[in-house]
Image 1 (tube, rainbow, N blue to C red):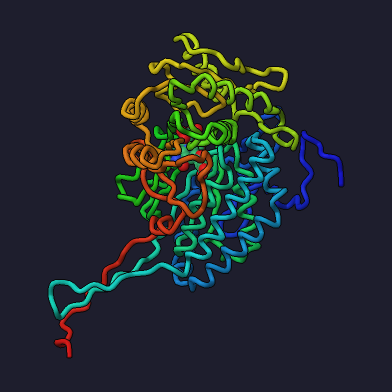
Image 2 (spheres, rainbow, N blue to C red; image 1 turned 30 degrees about the vertical axis):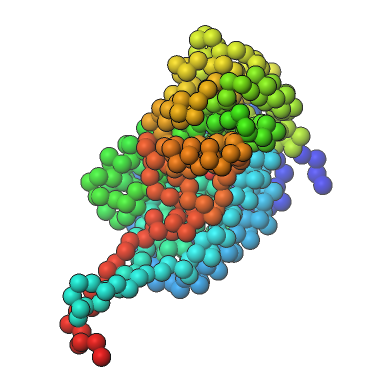
Amino acid sequence: MAAENYGRPVFNDAELLRKGAYIDGEWVETAPESFEVTNPANGEVIATLPEQPVSEVERAIDVAHAAFKTFKNTAPRERARWLRNMYNLMLENIDDLAKIIAWENGKAMSDATGEVRYAASYYEWYAEEAPRMYGTTIQPGNPTNRVITMRQPVGVCGIICPWNFPSAMITRKAAAALAAGCTVVIKPDSSTPLSALALAYLMEKAGFPKGVFNVVLSHTRTPEFGLRLCESPKVKKITFTGSTAVGKILMKQSASTLKKLSLELGGNAPLIVFADADMDQAVEQAIASKFRGLGQTCVCCNRLYVHSSIIDEFAERIAAEVRKFVVGNGLDPKNTHGCLINGKAVAKVEHHKQDAVSRGAKVVIEGGLLPELGPNFYAPVVLSHVPHDAVVAKEETFGPLCPIFSFDTIEEVVGYANDSEFGLASYVFSKNIDTVYTVAEALESGMVSANTGLFSDCSIPFGGVKESGFGREGSLYGIEDYTVIKTLNIGSLPPRI
Ligand SMILES: NC(=O)c1ccc[n+]([C@@H]2O[C@H](COP(=O)([O-])OP(=O)(O)OC[C@H]3O[C@@H](n4cnc5c(N)ncnc54)[C@H](O)[C@@H]3O)[C@@H](O)[C@H]2O)c1
Ligand SMILES: O=CCCC(=O)O
């Protein structure tokens, strides 16, 4: 095997690296303008892609709208076969797809490989769900009437995704949409579009008809692309993963056409460790939750609340694990953690750290900037006895800062946990089922994970409450978000025999 070059990875199938947008089954490689995709680990340009004019989004919408007319009538079993093909193709190409993610996003290869498996699992799951879109029969008030409900695909879906899971945030939406019989127009983040394009290349191989899966590209015109998708009467649903601020913009813009919406937005996950928790388990799982993707996932714990009787031991045990991390270029498999996405992300972590320290937090691991590795590298920080008025108690850091707060009573810690406008994920560690259950019921969040820091799976309903958004992705519920219920009322039937 050729030696790895950590500037440019070696791919088994170089065709996965595409140079253009994908509309109506054709690659669109030219446009009057272009934008560059860079490797966040070293700033090298890894691709130059067309900066598409807004007219191309309109064309993609028209194409998806035309394709919907036939795709909606394909047999669910046929859609299931294409989805299953896609699952198989992703796993056949797992090394290449992981390298693309690590290259454009900066995450470690272990995380990137996990992401490909996770992303592919949505195709497998929805291959199984496609034939199971059940309706109901109802006896209404009038005894001569019968009611049947059927689930029908909502129509063209606009999919807008972030950079932190360049593959999985797309597949979690697209697999469910396609299973239901919808067609899609995808706008990936301009920092990480190569994974989306690799998926389009595989969709073609999987056998999906032309026009069903479209990917449009833009860096500078992203807000205009979003506006067109939201305002087009041909687009029936917008599904977005990203920040709460952008989610609110999309919701406002979608009002004129009253679109169906799914919004997977920001989080500020609390992780609570009670005195009776299994310490080994709590430490291991808190590490897994906090530092997945170097802290850049919406479900990473952002605030760790640890009982005052064990906080010092817990902080030392966390620090001992963090000292084992090897931070470096994500493409080098010996590195456990990669870099942050950009300078803005680095600045936010640094701000949260400085703010907490200036308010009296105890520094357990100093961490901080790693200029010798590159401007986007940041060594993990561990702070304990963080004051409850620190900025990090309120804002999502989205980076490798592990702030540990102290609490004494169950009521007090539930109060801290719920004192947030966000409500995506929460974690509770205790060996007492009464504590776990009581706290889980009281936490204001869409997902509660007990005694484990990793819960994401295609089988679970993923989504938030409060300003973390609405809609559920994955699971049996995920497909519902891409359907509408039609009621058929059959009247004037003869009396029952
Ligand atoms: N709830 C979830 O499932 C989930 C998952 C991943 C990330 N997130 C959240 O996403 C945030 C981090 O991602 P981010 O910084 O890329 O978020 P972001 O909202 O800035 O960007 C998300 C996507 O929206 C695009 N975008 C930005 N402005 C737009 C506009 N006006 N119209 C249309 N598209 C627009 C961006 O280009 C990007 O592709 C965090 O808050 C994180 O918690 C949530
Ligand atoms: O970043 C958000 C998604 C994370 C996940 O699906 O586990």
